[in-house]
Length: 251
Image (cartoon, rainbow, N blue to C red; front, side, top):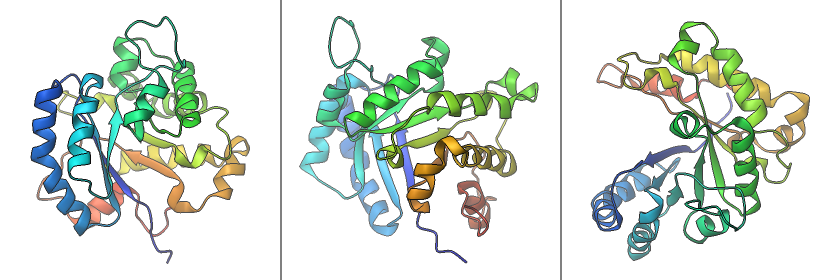
């Protein structure tokens, strides 16, 4: 049996909550506990993703008490280096404060009409500036109920992640979130999420991706599930491992 060496990422998207002062206070409250968690589990890393206006304030908190595997991430960015793009944030700006950037979040795709092609441009820009892109994918309720999950995920993966360079592709994180499970009372199952994760990894084994996929060890092939599932006392370690994709037969 292969030894599992993947690192789980706990990324907290604070969305449009907490200005600089509140964000700093909140960070000071949670960072010590996160630090203890990192010490207990060496295969976990945490990324804090406050609003853009609060990034500097949270960065200062992290620098006051530097802890291993606790990083700062942005919730979005534009793909241009600079220019007349009012309200946008350039990758050069994000890279001054952050190690990571969330791209293609379902809310960005839904409310701000971001396309796979735009997400691809942003991901390419992130990689050029040594940022770890967390590329979000997922299907809506009507797509899920129509049995279109595989089609949607296949399209999002192939278009959002097209033409990544061999050298940088290992830094990509794919986050699958079943959008239909947000605020609907419905919950993703282990089996359902597992099928989508398997599909994503299958797509990466296609010829277009096989060069970099085979070049990097399995611990760097990063596919994560970000799901609204029921995580109660009845979910034991076996179920958790299956949801994370840690089964012995997993590639």
